[in-house]
Length: 486
Figure 1 (cartoon, one colour):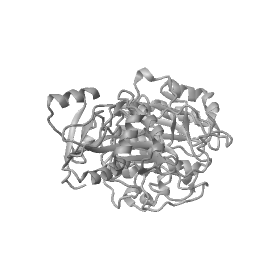
Figure 2 (cartoon, helix red, strand yellow; figure 1 turned 60 degrees about the horizontal axis):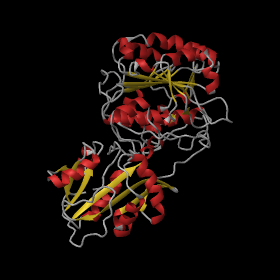
Figure 3 (cartoon, helix red, strand yellow; figure 1 turned 90 degrees about the vertical axis):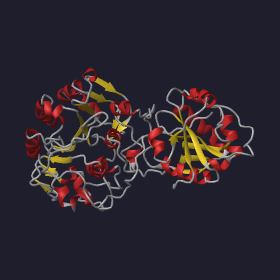
Figure 4 (spheres, one colour; figure 1 turned 30 degrees about the vertical axis):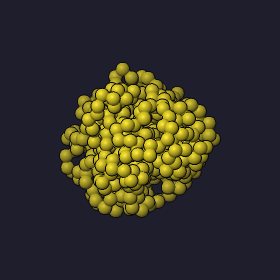
């Protein structure tokens, strides 16, 4: 029997369009308490314009690393401040390449739309901002270009949301009154972030402000703190920036360690989505690795990029779209690479996939981004309750086949949470309508995912149960009536 799996956490309903309402708490209401898989609060603190090596040599930045996890392969994006800030909450820089006063239309969603989806409280704390929701370009040492959410009309034209763009003085009030939000973005003023003063000045301020907080039980409780830089200080490098994870959500045994997994600023959004099982924005957040602590808690498999050559995130980029198409014989080699990476314990031979394509091409789909194979789907008719054994040939599609079988659906980790699996499943279930029911074998604890499409566990006899054992203890045989609406 073959396997039918989706190794992803897929969330539906929120697209790249911002909803016309706000479900989260108002600024003056008690903070929410929505538990997460790895952290219950996430606070981002952004500093300015320093090469990784320069930050690593600063004594106060070393102190931060000693109290947290240093991410040694964390990358920023464009070579201007403003686009990086915009991308950190929107999952894309939308072609911005300057620090001017820009506005992004209200129909473009941000991370706060994802948070509001589950009523997760959020705020921005901008040092020096003269009033909540201030929209001017500068006031003293406060600069608008370092305020990511104010650029989005979905926030700046919503009075309730504007109330949540606060000052650091408001943060002190919220902390002392146990009203901290669950998501927050902190921007020191243009002196304290090092922009106008350099790493020595900025790092001294940062440690002086942050060190007492790391001893505050309420602040630390379940909190993940990200200290990072908007970009490096050199345009001729690939924009690696010094980034440390701290807080009560970090295992004390990991403090003073490093993590060499590839991350970038979009990883914060993707980690938020995975931590609280939220939808994605459908942009670069879908490609981004999530922080390892979240990946471990959610069984998410990051993509370990072995070479960073050519990954120039400080160039203008437009994400190519991954799309489903008809599989061809030339796709088999790439398909096998994907299968071996996702299913190392459930191997199948290339000739098995080639035979399925030859016998029932209509049920074989390939997911590509450009020339890269990033996912696939195999399905075909079978006789009722007689799925084929793992890594076995069919010989033919039985003339009396009376059930549809989804053999496998697999998508590389960095292409998940875009709704791509759902699109493919809908296509396959349309083909399956020729038969009374559709069946599959669920592994990797994906029964809840398949339940969204009407699949339910079905009792099996001893013969079928023996086949299921090939897939591991968690394997379940699921079926679906094809009379159900798609």
